[in-house]
Image (cartoon, rainbow, N blue to C red; front, side, top):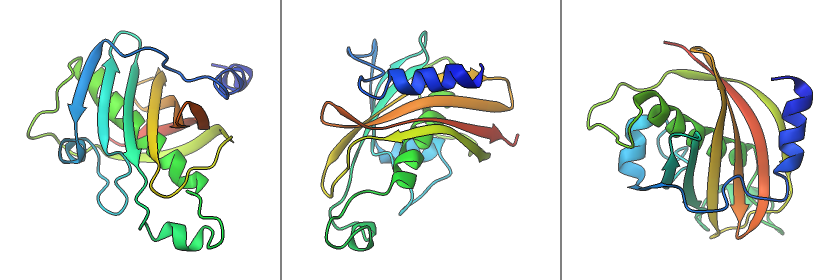
Length: 177
């Protein structure tokens, strides 16, 4: 994909969700199952639930409730607490890693024993921050796989505040094994 195509996608999904209808495969995985897929742990596990999947289209939906007591809100910013943009990118990236697992396995399952994924974030291709996210807010997370070549993967993802797109980003990771 060319840089102009990435920018076109970012602009296209600044105002509308990646996923409008329910996904064909409902999921009901919580933090315990998500921890099997991700190397992240408290306080940096930033996806609470996986709620839907479309293996054919390479789409996933999930969510996170931003705890009002999260210490990040005390410093960002004391008079106007909002969730930092870098953590919004991290939520999207973690959801993208969950999607990668399902696409690689071809099944909407999380086995009891699974090797931890070893990755490095390599770049944020682009991002727009459009609405603030507040303490206690429920955030819907959406992601779509754009590319995977066996080593690098790119996803486009969104964090939604209600029906509004709070953040849209395209991110890339490198798989180390």
